[in-house]
Image (tube, rainbow over all chains, first blue to last red; front, side, top):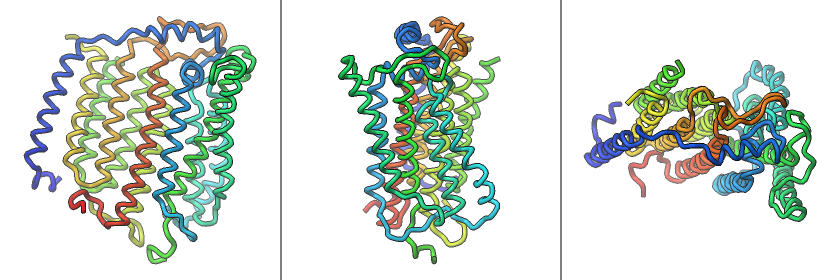
Length: 239
Length: 86
Length: 117
C-alpha cells in the first residue's frame, strides 16, 4: 500500500474518475431495464424433447444446436497450448519445480489418484443427464495428474508421445463424426445415432459421443500444458 | 431472502477485490483469488445455473489460480521455499 | 426504484469492474495486471448470467421422464452455454500470457513494467 501513496501520476487519477462517471451513468441507465425475454431459449426448450432426447438442456445447446461454437472453442484451446509450447524451451534433462520430498503426500495421493480419475470419467460420461460434460471432466482428470507431479517429481514420467497421439485422435474423431453426419443428412455435426429414451444413459444420439471426444481432448491438452509449465532446467536452483 | 444472500455475496466480492489489490505480497493475492472464484461459484448456483457453477469451480477458480501460482514460483526462484516481497 | 435482484447484480458487477480496471492501470507488477484482468472478466460473466434470472425459476434439467421442459418454469439455457465457452477461452488467454511473462523474466530479469527496453 505504501507504493500507492508515493507516486500515482495524475493521468491515472483522471482516467479513474472518468471511468467511475461512465459506470455510474451506465448504472442509472441499466437500473431501469428488465431482464430480456427468452424467446430463442423458449423455442429451444420446446424443441428439446422432440429432436434430441437429452435431459440436460445446456448440453444439447452446446453440442447440438450450437455445435460450431464448440468446434471454435477447441481450436482456441489448441492454439493456446501450441503457443505455449513454442515459448517454453525443450530441455533434455528437466526437473520438477513443484517437487518436495514428503512421504505423507505420496501415501495420500496413492489413495486419491484412482478416485479422482474415476470421478472425472463419470462427469464426462454423464454430461447429458446431469450438470457436467467434457470440459469440466477433462480438467478434473488433468488435476489428478497434477497431484501426481506434485508427489513424485521425476519418478513419474508421462510419455509425451502417447498423450499427443491421444489428443490428436480424439480431435480427428470429433471432426469425422461431424463429417459423417454431413454426408448422411446434410447437417454438419448433426445426429446420426438412434435416440433412446430420455433420462437413460444410452440416449441423445451422437451428443454423448461428441462430448466424450471433447473431454478426452481437453484432458490431454491441459496435462501437456501443466507439464510444460513445471519444467525447469536441471542445474538451476543449485541442484 | 435470496435477495439478501445475493447482496451479501456481492459485498464480499467487492471487499475481496479491494483486498487483492492492496496487499504487499503477491502470494497473498493469489490465495485471495482462490476465494474470489469460490464465492463466484456460490453465486452461479444461486442463479440456477449448475453447469456454469461447475465450470467456474473447476476451471475459473482451480486451474486459473494454479497456473498463476506456478508462474509465481518460476519467477521468484530461490533455494529453499519462497520468501518474497512484492 | 425498488430493490430487486437485477439492480443488485448490475450495481455490484459494475463496481467490481471499475475497481479492477482502475488497479489494472496503476499496478506495475506483471502478475497483478493479469489477476486484475481475470477479475474484470469474471465480473462480466456474473452480470450476464445474473441479468437473465427471475425469481423462482429452476435450472433447465429434468430428473425423470414425467417432467417436461417448460419455458415459463426454467431459466434460459442459451446464455449459460455461451458463458461456458467463454470461461474456457479466458483461461486459454491466461495460460498464453503467463508463458510470455516467464519468457520476459528469463530474457531481462525483470518482472515489472517500469523499464521496458
